[in-house]
Image (cartoon, rainbow, N blue to C red; front, side, top):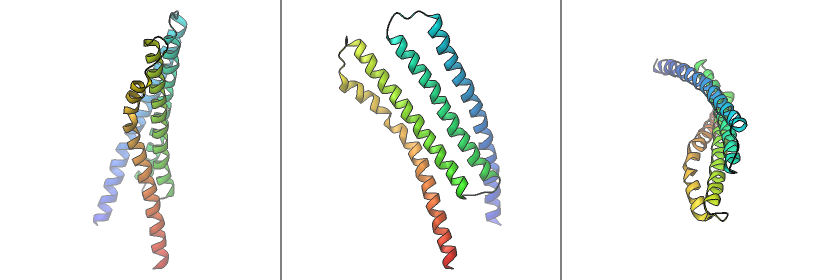
Length: 175
């Protein structure tokens, strides 16, 4: 009886989280549109006086890609929660959705990290008149390495669940 109650709780919470992912997906589309539209408008409306404006425009477009990666991660999370809601607890496709979401989040972190390093290197180079003290630039950018922990933990959890499935299948065959 307790197992059935827990399964119903998982379905109920998964439905709520699935709906939350849907709302966040819409927000990602809106934010990416705003970022790209504002970047495009500023590129054509404001005359560039400094080379930083071009880099800022490129960084803004890359920031729009950040929302695309976020959208894809949320899409996989939404499918993951949908599968849990329909009672497909920890089967192959469910675990693969979790792994895919973690990979998209890791890609999002990588893009963010590259943008951060490139912007800091360029800004430091401009401030130093062409020669950058790269030690301080890279140490500031590498402070964002902790952002890779959550995607790696999600990928690890998916791997752990996949291994648990394999062990369960082997146990069922030996009994």
